[in-house]
Image 1: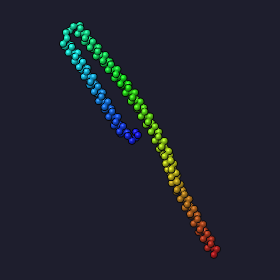
Image 2: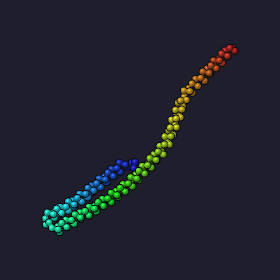
Image 3: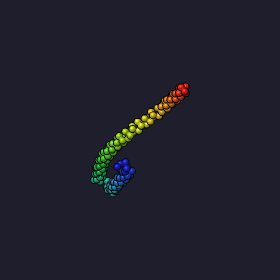
Image 4: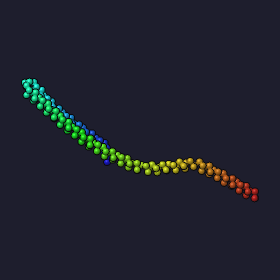
Length: 160
């Protein structure tokens, strides 16, 4: 199936990759827009509040909230990375095993045929090499037969 549909499978994988990239980009933009809004509120708080200890405490609380949110996002990103690595690694291992099996099947089919062809070519080469020797032997036998015929002809002529 892979041999016949490898282009369609490749295009499908590329399309899925594009969709996931678009989703990741959308997620990134959404997160950063939220962070931008949050920082704008902090900046607005800094500009509009009085410079008292309460306002500094509020600012410190907001910054610690940002830190906590970023830590949560970082943990989720790490979890997603691990899941993607496991998923891709297992699929690549499966594909690698299937490719190795296909290579073995091809070798099992092709090797006996090549051995048979190799034997036949060797036999033809041997016969071609023996051809000139056989021709020389045939010429020698023909010369002896002709010599015998001449000798028999001379003997029968001498008897007459």
